[in-house]
Image (tube, rainbow, N blue to C red; front, side, top):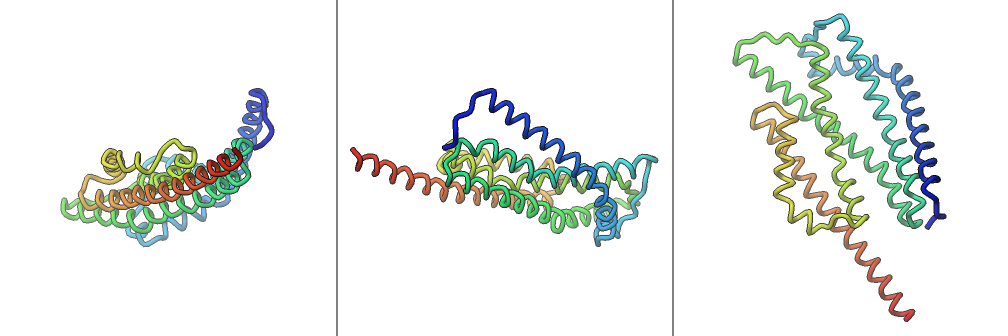
Length: 251
């Protein structure tokens, strides 16, 4: 374990890391301006976007979209830094092996976030756009889509999935802390499914196919989280057994 720190030391350390995070975010935000325009052009040239004629309904719409995307870019680049600062803050209270294990959570978390974004953007989002086109054709409507509304809908679909895909990492972390167990996750499965159903309904339009396409991956993600929790719990039990055996041997 690391050296003991006073409450004042912890507060000073937390303050220092918060300031570092804010400074990093500001730098990422400034750097994001150089990436925003190429990203907007790319998103407008995808197969899904080229089917739409994007319009501006206010003079400020392009500026709003520009700043929204710059802000999201800054958040994405700052997220790993935040996770590292969080790890560095709690690591003095961990054993050396625990520090190495928890440090691996950062790249895993980033990969899961990118996986959630990719799934929602390349699979779910085109399906939802197709559904909207089909609905407009059935109702004989001519869709006039604003660029602000288009990107808001895109972010509404993709960002939540990136966050929801963090579930396995969160479950693993809570299991290692001893806050939850695999048996608890199994017992509350039906309640968890109900919550995931509600989340899926909030993310998707009110049609059954879209709802199913979102709900099934979330259910699978929860089951994967239970399996990960079981693996972590078995390792914790083995470590406890070894420690108990050593303690009895010393006695």
